[in-house]
Image 1: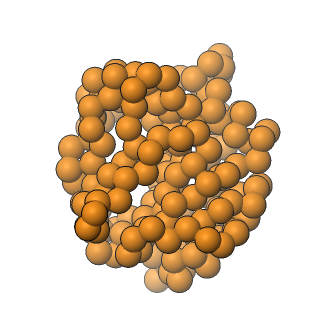
Image 2: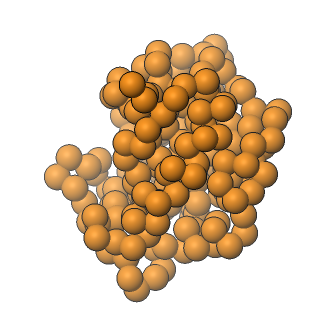
Length: 179
């Protein structure tokens, strides 16, 4: 386990499988409180993109919290570069509100997305984290608030999430390799 200041807290980072790290204490109390209550504010809006998974809502492009996530990406990037050994540039930021009956089928992220940092924010009910299938035994990240994972996607690891009966909120930053 090593400690990295990924954003505004000393995060505990632990390698759990090839090119895959578990992160605990992702954010300091103020940032975590702000992000984990996004679903309760009156300034952000949610919608379901045409290509979005069923039972998943995402912040609309004009939502202030999405802009905040985009502003956070360059500040998160240096620690991710140090952890993964890859020079990066921001690609996408997302915040997902997954509703009961949501699931994510087995898939690999697009090869262009070389690093994904997903942080679990809020949960209610019986929800699951992400399971990666490239290791034996498989690597599963339980959905625990203020924890997450870093996936170095150079090997296009397959992963999925089982059907949930509850709701969960998470944020995701994805990066491309800097050329």
